[in-house]
Image 1 (cartoon, helix red, strand yellow):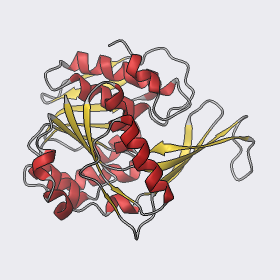
Image 2 (cartoon, one colour):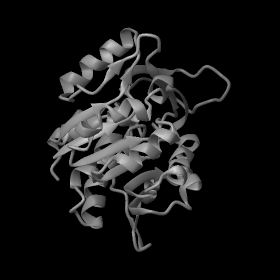
Image 3 (cartoon, one colour):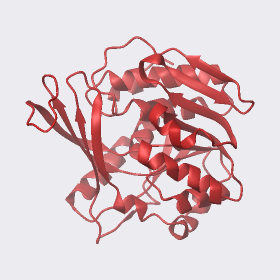
Image 4 (tube, helix red, strand yellow):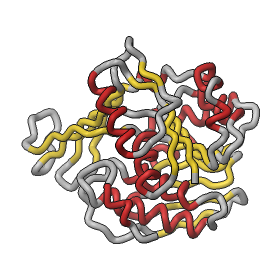
Length: 284
């Protein structure tokens, strides 16, 4: 399956405390640098699952950007629709985890991703619509998301990214003409901004240890239990879950999409990295 992913690619700096995290103090632990971004992580997971992935983003003009592009190409992503912006820094996300791997909070600098405009995407629309499915994240601004909703003809999935950014999807649907998308994924905190959203075929809400809640177009909601696992890092769990849902395809039942999504999420959180390379060996 050919999937086009539009969204952020950034440098991830992840700090994990060795003992109980103490706020406003220096905590012994580990600090790791890796490549992330919700859009990039979803694209990475899809490539590991065997899909043909076209990633669409704007990179910064620094050394980090060059490293990001090399990594994406090595993974197997098609970057032919991307662009490097010399005047902007690479996107960066710094997160802080407790000793159990749960994220306590983070800060995202995504100016270069927010520079993706509807005019910039319009020049690439034919290639984007050639995909079997399209995924976008809310690192994009509402007017850009609204344009995507109105102009992308392939089934469209949207990842809500975070609490502060989830409202961008709601605003995008408010200003959109079509006001419809195939599916979106959010967590419980992000749902506060999206509870009133309609016009979807499926809504996926991650509820941590409780599992995955799926609502279909009829309003029927089902909770699928989380799979037993040993959590090491929750940062990329939601990204892997949505990749699994997209990989299942629009022809899959709600139950099948949830099953594959939860398998991918478990694989992700059992790794120290935001994306677990072992996903390529996952038996679905």
